[in-house]
Amino acid sequence: MPDNPMSATGRTAVVIPAAGRGVRLGHGAPKALRLLGGTPMLVHAVRAVARARTVSQVVVVAPSDAAAAVRTLLDEHPLPGSAGSTDVTVVPGGATRQESVALGLAALTGDIDVVLVHDAARPLVPVETVEAVAAAVRAGAPAVVPALPVADTVKRIAPGVPPGEPEPVTDTPERALLRAVQTPQGFDRAVLLKAHERAAGAPGEGEGATDDAGLVERLGVPVVLVPGHEEAFKVTRPLDLVLAEAVLARRRATDGY
Ligand SMILES: Nc1ccn([C@@H]2O[C@H](COP(=O)(O)OP(=O)(O)OP(=O)(O)O)[C@@H](O)[C@H]2O)c(=O)n1
Ligand SMILES: C[C@](O)(CO)[C@H](O)COP(=O)(O)O
Figure 1 (cartoon, rainbow, N blue to C red):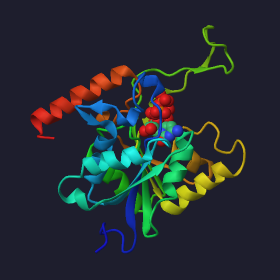
Figure 2 (figure 1 turned 30 degrees about the vertical axis):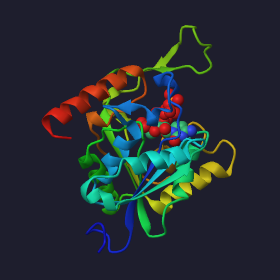
Figure 3 (figure 1 turned 180 degrees about the vertical axis):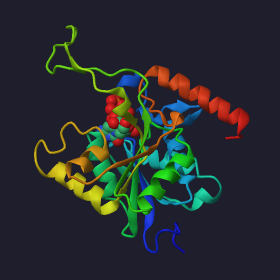
Figure 4 (figure 1 turned 90 degrees about the vertical axis):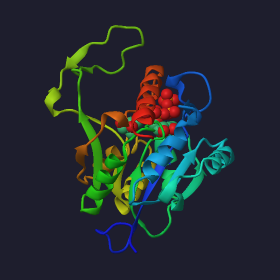
């Protein structure tokens, strides 16, 4: 039986780039292996996406020197309930997020036609967000991104200012037209593969793209936004970890999470 009623053929996979060092979070193990509520952040992220009924394969992209350790870690934390049937593959990552995602894409099984890319650093994404992104791709959008309005006013600055120098402002984009984007970002598999192949194919092609949708935009393929979720925030700096611990404690107390 297909994993989603909208698809007669393909299945949905999630690639989880987890090969970053977590420099901005500070010293310690690679960020994905840092504990959140006593459990590695990566385990939370895998559970979060595998909870989605539509997801049948998860590819974890591990730090290149820790792929075997990550495999062991995931075996020690089996997926609960019906998520237990999800196929979880581990591959070694690359030097950049973009390279790591490309390595994850190479490990997808042949029958996958919808791919979500989800940061291990967003361990608390609600299952509803994962399902909404996958459903929008299944409904025909080639690239779907969860996003939230921006709370701060954003300034653009001139490039090339040395660190420590005052940064000259060039303009103030209209805030109502800005969105902060999250993951999982969802794609038609062929579109995402083409975007990554183009980025890897020529020097400078993928430069400056900080997310996968940015690479797809460079192909001229339309990208659409769906509502993101405040709890899908990225654990980047130490204060984010404090917030993540608080959200997790609340879920455990109120939802039996
Ligand atoms: N070479 C890399 C770099 C990043 N990532 C992953 O991409 C996601 C988003 O990256 P980020 O939050 O920037 O993580 P880090 O690169 O670890 O953070 P930092 O820049 O502070 O070192 C994370 O899940 C991270 O593990 C990856 O798979 N491979
Ligand atoms: C993909 C992303 O999470 C979307 O907001 C973000 O661009 C990743 O940036 P990072 O600097 O690699 O954390």
